[in-house]
Image 1 (tube, rainbow, N blue to C red):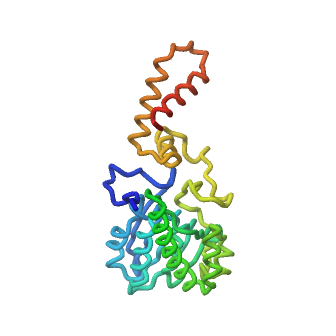
Image 2: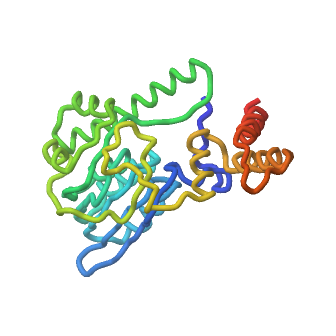
Image 3: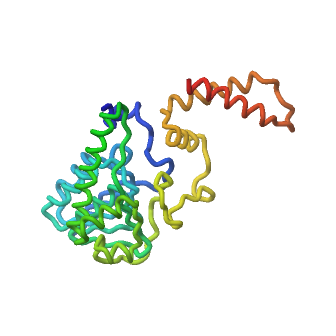
Length: 282
């Protein structure tokens, strides 16, 4: 089974998994009695990776870990979780916005887990992308099942909920409000409402709460960079292929007769897009 190589050089990887985000950061501050760590980003090479996190945790005593993250790479997340569980100091986790996907597993490492009254947890089954024949995919399915089982047992151990109910919640891609998270055991306390310092376009998920839906108007303008990210996410293209497509599209369109300033032939543009798309999809 050939999997996408997530350890490939940065120049060969897409910029981010989630199409758009604002306000992302990874910040570590030493206070008088503790170390404060903010994970306001994706997990893994898109944002905060396990190696970087471990290096900042190494000399910390008691830790206050604030999380606002849509998740990311499952193995980086598991490594961060394990480092926190093995940490000798007290670990207090505060979900200040969103702890989704593998970020929700990281949150389970807290000796205390508090959530903002307007915060959310989300748990679901692991995802991956692969190439191969049916035997390869059967093997991959088995691997994913093992990962899901390990994650479910982590949730069940921390929350006290039954393993079957946790697995059903993962199958359903379950979004939990602060109240629901506390009732089930994902959180043990509250920190009141917060103004999340980072926002993510989490439209790759299925059942997004209205409060987390991306509203581009007034948040971030649509830019050429946004267009590239969306194309890479939706079509699975590399940045170089997106840019080659744009160059070919521009050339194809410029070969048409120039229109008057007040007259735009959208049918011609549509034909040009179709023609270039056909070339790239052959």
